[in-house]
Amino acid sequence: RVAQQIDLLIHNIGTLVTMKGKSGPRQGREMSEAASLQQGAVAIRGGIIAAIGTEADVRAEIGGAAIAAAYDAEGLLVTPGLVDPHTHLVHGGSRENELSLKLQGASYLDILAQGGGILSTVRATRRASEEELFHKAKRSLDTMLQFGVTTAEAKSGYGLTLEDEIKQLRVTQKLNEAHPVQLVSTFMGAHMVPEEYKGRADEYVQLVIQVMLPEVKRQGLAEFCDVFCEQGVFTVDQSQRVLEAAKALGFAVKIHADEIEPMGGAELAGELGCISAEHLLAASDTGLEAMQRAGVIAVCLPATSFNLRLKHHAHARRMIELGLAVAVSTDYNPGSSPTENIQLAMTLACLNLGMTPEEVLTAVTINAAHAIGRGDRVGSLEIGKQADIVIFNAPNLAYLPYHFGINHVHTVIKQGKIVVS
Ligand code: NIG
Ligand code: FE
Image (tube, rainbow, N blue to C red; front, side, top):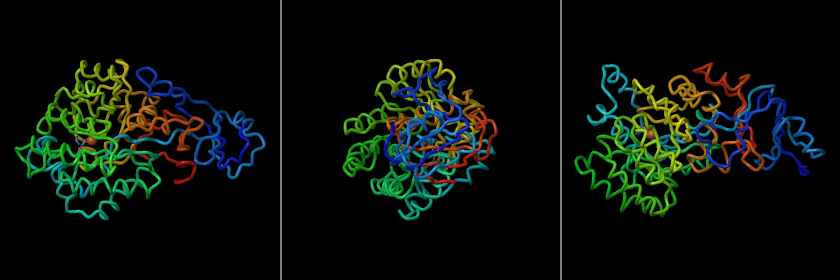
């Protein structure tokens, strides 16, 4: 029995998808068990879920406790707040100029090799003041929240000098304090070799290892370290050096692996015990198996392969068959995925990756939360977890990816407070 006052009771929920029932990420076939019930209710106290289940059970459980506020969910679909586990949120400028190059047939790596791509965003980010970066990223974060995202990861990697990386990471820190969306910070100094180090990638790697990583750690500006392991960017060996140094300093590690060329990034992720590996379009079965054995979460980015006009996508079905935990993210960034719309990524995960609606929701809630080390607090609706909740203008789960390209959000609740309605 819940004796104390209830701050908010959400009642008259049509379909309540809780994702409860497992302490770790959901692997392989477990991803289809979304755990849902009809005619549900959620009782919230102090921003935390105090009771959840059928409305009859919740009302019995809270008994005579005073209910400060009640919210009628109008028979709609309710899910955990969505988690976007991979974004390049903070950056200067935009790259719509690349659209015509793409239409003429230039590939992502062609544009990058010509000094555009990431490098053009690096120039814009270096030029921007902390305030400018803050206001631009805040607008994106507002959009993410409107689409139902209540927790997100944000990477640096467009500064590529100590000062400019710190500038980006400080913006993430300030946004986390100023905005309802909770942010998890990742240092990605090894996102690209900056122009001034052209042809001297090893020297730049040394700068990341000896100067940037220790200073980011000292200032407590990031929890994770990520690296872009790709042809023409960082080799497997360089990536390994960065991530091993990061681990030695106490960072948990991530890797952009085997996106375009099969480099052995997935194998490295397994070997290092990364918390997650991202992209993975070209990952080998051996690599995926190594990830599975080490419990590395596969973060698939279907909006990126769509936007890069790639002929193939991440092999999510194979990953699920091999027993991996799959997460899905927007990869929001100004080049390969200029969208904050996680619902679009969910549709693309269904249509282009072959994931079912249950698997997709698992991928953007509990598995995404585990991919950024927040699985104990968010990603599922269970007693004791944060009351991060989305009410969707949808009659059931399949309706979300089915009716695509629009925003289905009706209401967003973050830590018990209504932040979008
Ligand atoms: O995840 N692949 C590397 N980084 C980003 C793209 C960054 C950019 O193009 O600005 C990604 O796709
Ligand atoms: Fe990325």
